[in-house]
Structure formats: C-alpha cells, structure tokens
Amino acid sequence: MTYPADFRYTKDHEWIKVEGGVGTIGLTDHAQHELGDIVLVDLPKVGTSLAAQQTLGTVESVKAVSEIFSPVSGEVTEVNEAVGSAPEKVNQDPHGDGWLLKLRLANPAEVDGLMNADQYTDYIQQKAG
Amino acid sequence: METAIKRTALNDVHRKLKAKLVEFVGWEMPVEFSGLVDEHVNVRTRAGLFDVSHMGEIFVSGPDAIRFLQKVLSNNPAKLKHWQIQYTGLMTDKGTFVDDMLCHRFNDDSFFLCVNASNKDKDFDWMKDRSAGFNCSVEDRSPQYSQIAIQGPLSESILRAYTNVDLSKIRYYWFTEGEVLGEKAVISRTGYTGEDGFEIYVRWDAGGPMFERLLEDNVGCGLKPAGLGARDTLRLEAGMHLYGNDIDDTTTVLEAGLEWIVSWDKGPFDGRDVLAAQKERGLSRKLVGFEMVDRGIARHGYPIAKDGKTVGSVTSGTHSPWFKKAIGLGYVPLDLTPDGTELDVLIREKPCRARVVPTPFYKRSK
Image 1 (cartoon, rainbow over the protein chains, first blue to last red):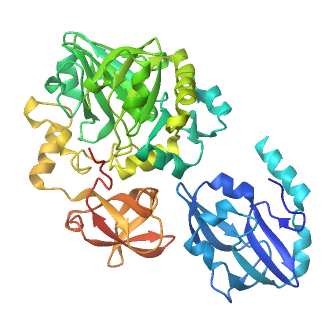
Image 2 (image 1 turned 120 degrees about the vertical axis):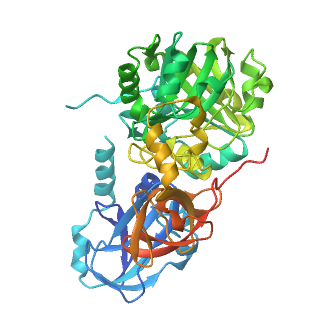
C-alpha cells in the first residue's frame, strides 16, 4: 500500500488531506489492517468543535474498540454517512470512500506538525520491526 | 520475572501464512489469517482449521482414577462408556471453577482431560495435591501434543481422505485412536465453534506438517485456516463459556447455568455442599444471553444496569459475524433472567438497550 503524498499522518494512524481550509480525515490503511473487520463507526455531529488530539469518535472491529483522535482543531462540516451504514468501507478503501469526516481548520499551521507520507511509512515500519 | 513467550509447533506455518500473531496467555498464537469475519463464516459454511496446541492434556490413570475424578469434577466420569467424552468442571470447595474441560475416557481406569492453556499448570497442581491417598497417577503430557481442530460442515468429508478411521462411526462427543497422515492420533468429534468437526491430538512435531498438508490439499474445497479471533466469536454464538470471562473461581457452576454438568447422585464431591445449599436457597444471579437493541457493541467488563442501577456486568460481548448484530453474556439478578427482559448495557457510560434472549444464539441444523 502506498500512502498518498498529499496527505498528512498522525502517530495514532489518522490521515488528513487539506483543501481550501477544509481537512478530510480518515484512518490509514495500516490502522484498518491492524483493527481487522470494522463493524461500527461512531462519529460526531456536524457543527461539533474539536481540539487537536481530542477524541472525535470510536471505531469498533469485531474484536475491539479504538478511539479516533482529531489530527488538528476545527469544526466538523460534514460526516461520511455511508461509513455509518457500511463500516466495512473503512477496510475496503481507507484512503478514499472510507473517509470519516471533514473539518474546517481552526489553525492550519497545526498540519505542518504532522508526518508526511515518507515519515509515516518509516514510522509504521519501525513499529513493525 | 519475565518468562519467554511459548510457541506451538505450528508457529513457522502461521508465519508462512502471514497470520496476525498475538500473545494469548503466554503463547504466541494466530488471531487472524484471512480476516476474522471471513474465517468465521467459512467455518459455518465450509470448514476451518485451527491450531489449538496451547491447550493442555492431563492424563489420569490407575485403579482409583474414577473415584478421584468423581471427587474433583462436577460431572460423573463413571457415566462415560469407553471412548466417550463429557464436558465437566474442576471444582473449588465453593462450587466455583478451577477450570472447565473435556473428560475423555479410554478404558476402565484411564482418562484424559483437555484443559484451558491459561489454567493448565494450576489444574495439574490442584489435581496432583488432591490425588494423595488415591491409587492413580496424574500426568501433564501437554508438551507432547500438538492439537489441531477442523470445524465446519465439510470437516468429515475433508478429513476422511487422511485417516484409517471410519469417521462416520464417531458420534458427537465420542473419540477414537487411529492414524492421520500416518501419524498416531487421538481423534475426537468435539469442538468450540457450534459446528460439526474433529479435534486431533498428534505428536508435537507432527502438528506443523499436518496443518500445512491439510490446507494445501483442500484450499480448493473451501478449507481455510482460522485464528483465535474467529474461535472466540464462534464459541460465543454457540453459547459456550470462556474461562476467565464467563466462568472463573468466583462463579458457581449453578450460576453459570451449567447444572447439567453437576452429578448430584454420584456421592460427595468438592463443592457439593455449597452447591446443594445454593440450589436449596435459590440463586441470586445467573448468566444470561442478550442481544443489543440500541446501536452499540457490548464488551467484556461493561456494566449492566436496570432502571439506572448497575446490576451486573458483561462477561463476553461481540458483534456476531453470523447474525450481524451485537450479542453477549452477563450475570444479572435472577428476576432479570427471563427471555425478553429489557436491560441497559453501559457503553462508555452511555446506557444502551439490550434484551435477554435464549442461548445458544446459534444452533446448527443437523
């Protein structure tokens, strides 16, 4: 799996893609693989304000529950309803149709503190090694 | 003190198959191969192959073997015919579980117990201590055996080609000795999935090649490796208990809903007096099955509440891959055990509605 160069990544395995002040957020392919079959995704309502590192929701596989953390601060502008009714989309297309939500960035500079694709790839390889 | 992680003889095979490995009670075990849901459904519809070599094998033999086992176990091994198996509990003096296990009877005075990996050493010490004064030996032969389970409706038709035993003659909860792939094997028609299938005990080193060969030959007819993840969801759907979750040394065999493995008429046994008194007095709590009504998945340890008051807790809970809904087991006060009773499971402090339902959740069509 290659990690898109126009995404930024967190140590908790979320990705964010920023376009015109709005960030699309999802889980990385590594995260979905570690979690296994995802069967439930709980996301916040549109309008919710989130701080960076704040829990934005939970994702549950058959085996376990994991929290999802917001990579940056901002206000939720859109939630991927398709993932609510078909959580397996996160497994099938984590960097595409399986996106979770969109956020209007409160402080776009926060994105610079996240890993780029090369750094993230090294990060997960180190963890595996 | 840090102890080294234990590996089954099949570890290299799991790595070759790119299984996801996790530590489970001191053993490095495959939790998933192709994916939990895929493996689960494959066991229900075709067949799955499990490495369960971490399980313990304890042999009890001698003229007093029956008398000894009658004393320490809840069930009555004297009721077994040769080559028959029963589910049973190793009891504390309080009628709670040291462990739960399968008791296999070879002949008049020789038995073998298949016990949980997590409890094997404790079980062995427990029985060894209590066997003083009985003319029988208690032997831990776990390191000698690999155990492979083939589970699912195609199990018999797949395994048939590899054994000199007529598998169709082995009934559910019976076993035999024979050969599998030329290796001496104990073959029992048992399992922990709610499906038909066999558990095969062979010499330690024979486990890896056997697992690999069975898979290689039978990929085409639907046999897939399955991990501990699917084993757990399969057993829960089948309403089978897991030691450490649903039963332990704080839960009595009656509270667990397992009176059918208590033999009242065999004479004294460990825990009998406490159990008899509990039966006389009536239970204050019991293990029930439930399904979630609200969206949410109950998990081990989540509180169960009624009218805002915590009344018990979830002992096992998951998303059922077969029914595609959340199910679980938990202890609740006796007045909340009837089918249809509404309960709340507190999921991250939020009450989510659940309903008591009969177990097993899943029953195979025969």
